[in-house]
Image (cartoon, one colour):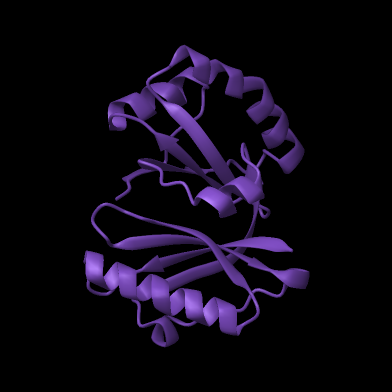
Amino acid sequence: MSLYLYELALTAPSREQAELTIKRFDAAAAEAGGGLIETQVTADHGRIFAITEFADCQAPDFTAAALEVEAVDGPSQVRLVGAEIDQVKAARPDAGYLVEWDIPAEIDMDTYLSRKAEKSPLYADVPEVAFLRTYVREDMAKCLCFYDAPDEQAVRHARDVVSTPVDRLHKLG
């Protein structure tokens, strides 16, 4: 089974629209032979980050019209780092913040994973922030890092401690 990221931009951001879109997306993924692993919604309800699982690298292209959203980015094959897929499936843990990092072109997957392993222990220096998990795109375009933290400043501080930039920071809710 392979993991895929879909990013959905909502036409009319609201909690109700986000919930309806997630139900619609979940049904579409199931109909296509896959499964929804987790979704995270930005606090303004404008974007949904959905992680799915499909066999044999067969994730479908969903259209914005079919999902009744403004735009769909994906599928993008991703790798889960920092957690086990069974844990994520069982708990469907909510995060408070999502950091998007556009990975520089000179960083390949091996370099990324080596750096992640080297820097992750430094999060212990920021006890108010819990690093939860990362989904790194296999094409190395970007990664999504999920955190539980009291505020944005704490997340930015944790990123500074591990010497990793923040391209976009989303409060989730």
